[in-house]
Amino acid sequence: MSYEFILVNPQIVPFVATIQLNRPKELNALNLQLMGEIRHALETFDADDSVRAIVIHGNERAFAAGADIKQMAGRTAVDMLQIDQFSTWDSIRRTKKPIIAAVSGFALGGGCELTMLCDMIVASETAQFGQPEINIGVMPGAGGTQRLTRAVGKARAMEMVLTGNFISAQEAKEAGLINKVVPVELYLDEAVKMAQKIAEKSPIAVQLAKESVLKAFDTGLQEGLYFERKNFYMLFATEDQKEGMNAFIEKRKPEFKNR
Ligand code: HXC
Image (tube, rainbow, N blue to C red; front, side, top):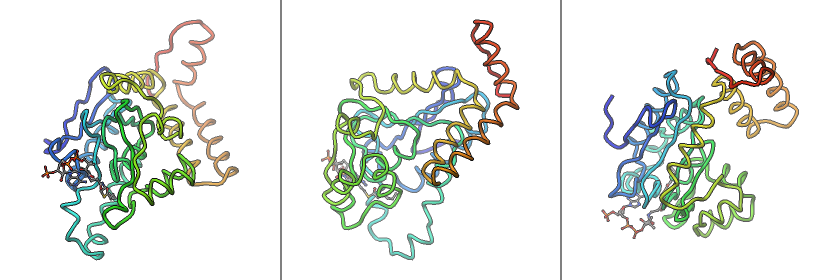
């Protein structure tokens, strides 16, 4: 499939794919088609054995400045309900392979929410994160009030959501929203390096580990621990577990086969 608003590279380095948001003039504002394209690309990569980790990025000026305000402005509540854009977001959230957001410039509104849908965030020193929906008479709708609050705590989430203030990459790092801050010329490389490191591991172990960490958002501790335990036991049914442990004992590098 060819895409209009994203650029995909299924193999920027072995086993790592990238998706670049590509509406630069509109600061990568997330219209419905762009989100559908991201969903399609992620589903394609999820089904492709030659992809083990995915990096989503924008350009230096913007990761994404939010949902496309021009597309939304005239909509009614019934339109919004019937368009049901969040089923696309829900499918993105169900991607089995790890996704790293590489962020430079603006990550605002839906853009900030998209980074939080990813599993890790690497940012350039110029990145700014914010939920400015309050400035245009609405509020976050794609998880901002929930994921941001879990990531940075009530005080900072309230401030960002109620005042619309942005936070810098450094503040986002200190607050626990993101993983790393690097100079702008390195943010994409650094995210790809992180993805590459994950891609060296057993893909089945990575998938179940990701699923287990995400479970912590949806469950109480005891239920989460049972879920984790089942996934942990299940990995002992894989060839990759035998290979990983034997390689350690034999002092060699493991060769994982995703089996
Ligand atoms: C549509 C957008 C846009 C957006 C920027 N543009 N953000 N178009 N939707 N979210 C367009 C501008 O209209 C402009 O187009 C061009 O991109 C460049 O933007 P400028 O405003 O000229 O740039 P600048 O002065 O540098 O300001 C950058 C900015 C500002 C601070 C990021 O653009 C801004 O405040 N954008 C809106 C941020 C926002 O409110 N996001 C939340 C959206 S609601 P022209 O044609 O004039 O050149 C949301 C809900 C999510 O995300 C929940 C559902 C998924």
